[in-house]
Amino acid sequence: MIVEQIEEEEEEREFERLCDAEEEVEERIKELVDPHLKTLARKYHHLVYYDDYNNEVFDKFNVELKYFYDRVIKKDQIVIDFIQNYPRKDRILPVILRAYILDDRWDFVQSQKDLGFSPTMTGVEFERFIESKFLEAGMRVRPTPVTGDQGADLIVEDGHNIIVVQCKRSQTAIGNKAVQEVAAGRGFYNASSAWVVSDAQYTKSARILAQKIDVILLHYSDVDKFLLNCSEA
Figure 1 (cartoon, rainbow, N blue to C red):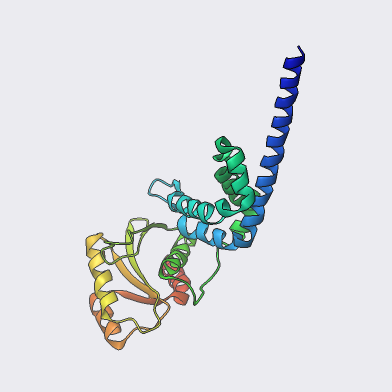
Figure 2 (cartoon, one colour):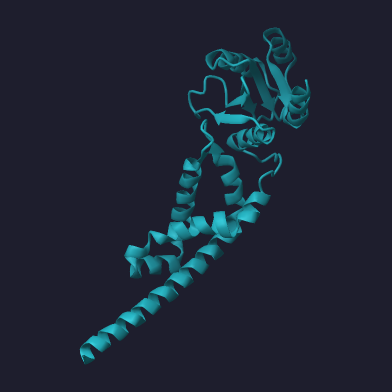
């Protein structure tokens, strides 16, 4: 009886130590996330999208979370100690990370939905920025593969109409190549319209060619107004 009682007491103490350790590591994960929360929120809105069946697809964001977990969370000493002391419990840590971002801080994540244009945006970030404009207009958007996109970065569906869009983030004027590529994408994807959207101006040659082969050239700041005019037409 005495031995059993001692074992039970030890089990209780071990359980209490585990609970304390879990609480400590959870708080530490939150502390590690907070300085990067704005970036993670931006990544969420750039990487999560709806597929053709109206399912929210998290695949790319999950990859980003794993990268953040491996490069930031797992390098912290408190987290390292927890994994070493409780190796079977390490699988709960990514769950804590995800829950904190998408549950506890969801209001903040949503508040970062429309971050607006930034001159420091990467090409991919600019694509997601333009994509958000079509989504807010109630259209369905499918990003194309990074390689082999056949001249289109986004495929936008508005009812029975399909628009192929090439997004060009550039410090110099956009020339004929973008016009030719998106025109080819229009044929490849059987689209009714082809757009180039950029943060830069277009060369005179590009404007002439676009008019000749019926390609729409837009500055990103004109997209919302153009979509509104289209909906009212």
